[in-house]
Amino acid sequence: MGISESRSCIAIPPGETVRELMEDHRIGRQEMAARMGITAEQLNRLLSGEAKLTTVLPAGLENVFHVPASFWINLEMQYRRDLLKVESEQEKEKMPPSWIKKAIP
Image (cartoon, rainbow, N blue to C red; front, side, top):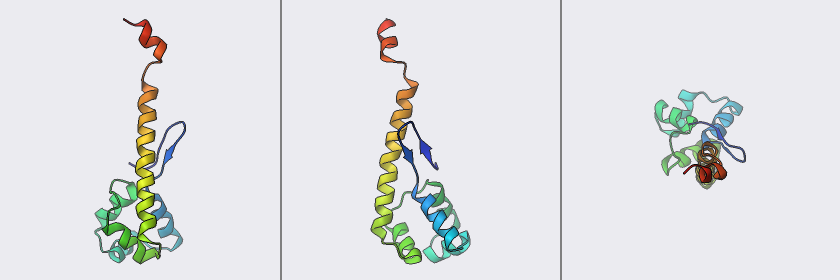
C-alpha cells in the first residue's frame, strides 16, 4: 500500500513512522522483528502498510520505542480514515463532470 494521496489528502501508513524511528534508533529489520516478537514478514507488512495495527503490534511497538500503544492505534485509525478519503477522491476524479452526464442520454 504505502503512501497514498489525492488533491486534498495524504494517507501515510503507521509503518512510515516505524521506519523513521527504526532509522533514528539504528534498529535493523531482523532486530526489530525479534524485539517485537513477530516474524520478518509481519514486520515487512507493517512497514508497507499492508498489516493493520491490531492489539499485538501496538504493544510490541510500545515495548520497543516506549510510545504508548494508544498512539499507534490512533495513528492506524487516522491512516485508514485518510486512505478512505484518498480513494473516494480518486474515484471522483475518474468520473466525468456532471454536465457531461446530463448531456449523454
